[in-house]
View 1 (cartoon, rainbow, N blue to C red):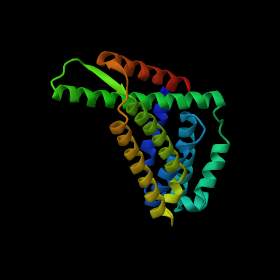
View 2: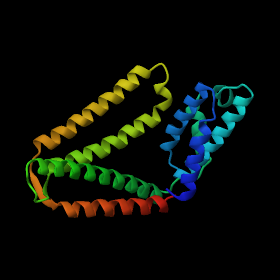
View 3: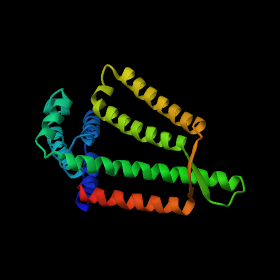
Amino acid sequence: MSRRTKLLLKENNELEKQIRCKENQAVLTDITVYIRSANINPYHQERARRDIWEMIAAGEKRGETAKDIIGEDYRLFCDSVIAELPHLSRKEYALSLLRDVLLSVDVLLAIWLVFRGLEQVLQGDRGFRFTVTAGNIVSAVLCIAGAFLLFHLISQNTFRIGGTSEKRTIFGLFLLLFLLMLFCMGANAFIQYPLFQLHGLVAVGGIVVLFALYKILDVKLD
């Protein structure tokens, strides 16, 4: 994320606190979640947030709610706003997806390294070499794919969650999360085929390199 986007993000977060009406606050939150899944870069996402905030803030001063200002179909309104903004090209979309995958892999690798390191310490092993199993790889792929799917479902159904089908939607999301965790734990527990060994220092170096690549892409795409 570039400096201009970070600054705009911070300003938007502060401005949203100025909205007094609870209903308007909830609508702004749902709109933000929905916009996060749009095929536009982070800077344009924040610009859209700012424009919508200005509309709602101005209406609130007149005693109007978000529904009065933008209508009852919030999703249709968001889609119309997003349609006016420049979309990511196929190359930009692929790079943005790669950026997000790099960060996800980096986080999972760091968590894996910490837990395996603690396990070795408790066992009195100071070799700092870890065996990577097929189950570790399968679990990581399932976690990343599941996290992306869960984010997409939540962002696309953010307006529905607050509606009449709230219980069914929330239940479905929790069920998906439960199944994801179950499959990941099962893969780690039952697929123990060793693939290769990895020294702890190499893993730490990999974490640093992955994070550096993530930061480069994050700035380049904004």
